[in-house]
Image (cartoon, rainbow, N blue to C red; front, side):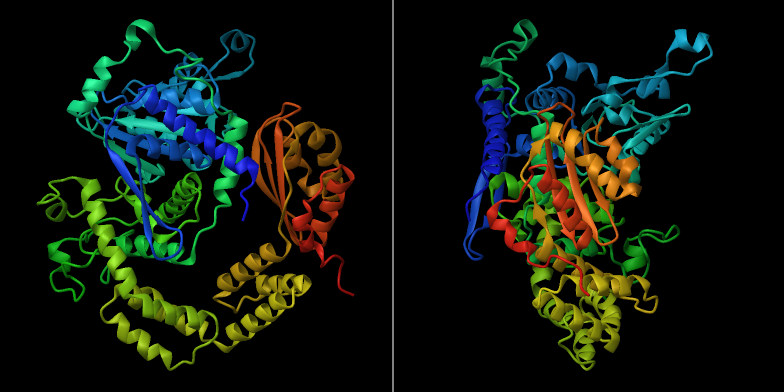
Length: 585
């Protein structure tokens, strides 16, 4: 399959940023990440990349991302992300510097978010002037753990809801890329609670440079004296518009089924317990007192070594960053790619049983201990394969109720099979489920889009189907396969002058949200009765890029006709997806 030119060119630009950073010695560190992947399903390829630099770059490739850089003072954490901000967005280093939020205990809401326009206030008007940290795309928080819990809560609103509030004004922050640094050994710091840490998609510990690294650093130009040359040494390599196009390409990256199943296994292995719910138990916690008489308390278990859960957010981040790494390498996401990126997504989110993580050979090294646990997860994942295959067959409607005994036998020695597979297997063996499933498969095989849409509506209204989520997800997947069309990028001027108003006229309930695309960068899904429109507006200049994906039935056809009249057409190799036009009589 020939790779799209846009995809290839943007990937090359990102690699140019990585190569230029190394070649110009903007950041010198010898730590290496061995990215493992398989292109044929058998032979494993290892590609070494600069660890800290590449992980920091991955954060820019994930939409609305946030990263935690952990290390001692003077390790160039803030300097690195400032330089990356210059190269990824094209903004000057001075502009990047002006938007940095410096953490300290005296930070107030006014110093973080906004202030009131004093002359206007004297006239009785509350006009809010938002801080650069809020309005700028590339956000840096220096020494986040020096901020008080009060200040952390203000940031939590930005990270969780992508909007901030000051007095009666609200500022949406729909697109951003955020980096936060912290020095755990700083005496004047505050603890970062687990829910706050969970908002950071990825993290990396910074070690100090080696002897060889220091030799290279000391031979390089003195930036305190000469500064940085922003034309040759730290040039603008990408724009925010191009970065948003990369976000869409990363999101479209294919993930293999085994890799997706491994993500499920990682999250559940870290979270399950046979005795308590780790997420809500306040009186009991994982440790020798609770685990001593448990059947699953073995040296090869993960559940007895982890005190906290991994959230659904962690699962989504693991998939998002695995896709980013796979896009950067230029391959689909496989299990090796997931295992490569998983330690960086997990290690800052969890609390380990101290007696396990503090002893040799780990001695409190959370990253090393996390990697050891993930190796155990991988082994258990392959040992569970037969039970997983049985569960897949049950979901496909290919098994009889007697298979439950086999699953229950596996569950005696596998906590995930016991807690996750056996209880829901009863539901999937329900005849109503298998009847729906057969109809869905028949409609898909016969390319009957309208039948799939009808069954989607039936399931929405069927209150007695407890496992409808599985069926609805399958219908949505099949609809995307049969009907999704991705249009080539076209200029914002065409969207503004010829397209958006026509769509808003046809679907008046979408008009308020569509109108926002005329003034702001947007990546959003719009839903009609039977269709989905995915829209990315990278900017509001005439030549800014707009990209559209459409999935669904008759409403999708209406939108396609509007696009065609405006001269936005589908490439010839995708037109075959439109053979199902029209409504059923």
